[in-house]
Length: 251
Image (tube, rainbow, N blue to C red):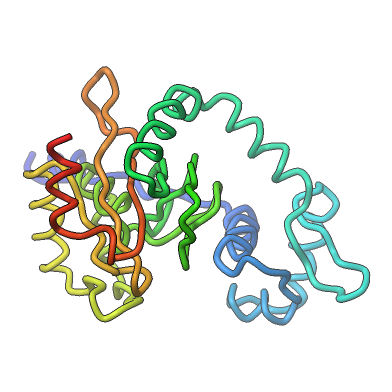
């Protein structure tokens, strides 16, 4: 009986179709590197033979998901990705509903405002859905549609704090990348940080992704009291000061 109960509790292993998984990993490389890639680069990063890489690229090219530059012979994202992205965006009511509030925040604080969601597919990343810029220039300001690691940004830490244990476990499975000397890379320290964020209801990015850039982020709740996104106010550390954090919280 005890053995039967143990068997029932075990989760069935997911069976992935290897060729599909590799194709999606290949497309994700463009998100990571944000430039054209050659066959040798793709082959090395995927850890597969060049012959396999050629077959994957030929298939994706035929279906419109990759494009080959006739001059460089390197590959880039095909137009089909744009069509899918726009279709997804058109169904995403969140950006439409939130934009007036984002604009109001930007005008109130004279800083750049981001709206982001969490991509939990593998290692957690944040995806920028909307952005309202000001006249102030930022050294680093991710464009709409871009992704950044979740552990080193205000919006990312907020979304991680309210995410499922499976999501944070995926992050803790491998080494946490360091970007600056203030990036939190120790798992125990990051767990403590996420617990504190959930307790106080906001997160602060202390130059953890880009030196000189700080941000203040809060969660966006749905009617069911679930966190569906996060909003951040970003600017140079000289302007996003601790005193200003208090001012933003109390406004």
